Amino acid sequence: MRKIVGSSKGFTLIEVLVAITIFAIGLLGLAGMQVTAIKGGSTAQRVTTAVALADGIVENIQSRDAGDAMFDSAVSSAAEWPQALAIGGYTATYTVAVNTPVTGLAQIFVSVSDDTYGGRTVTRTTIKRAR
Image (tube, rainbow, N blue to C red; front, side):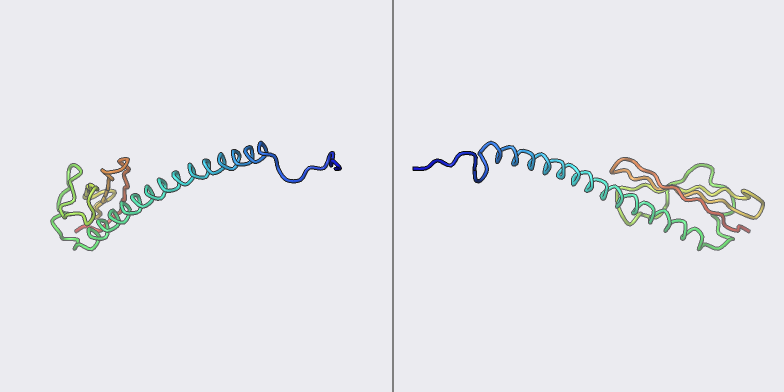
């Protein structure tokens, strides 16, 4: 019989184990990035919802007549939005500053807080003609 010296075919068991270990470490890194992406997507969804709620409240106030009682005198502190919010877990407040920045205008501040996840707050400010 003749021996073949110096020519090996295939991989040794140690080479295969090292390759599998490197591959597994790479997969663990990808799994960690996936968890971060899911958390980021959830946070973005909550902030987008808060923005939509704040914009809806601003549009509601803007659509009111300039002679509405809301614009007669300033709401001294941030009052909770009197109508129920369509989506739970959020708190909306608003402030109306009459004759601000000039006479005949009302400055409106709307704030929507996410009470469920992280407590992020979205604010909107606008100006409307008052009486």
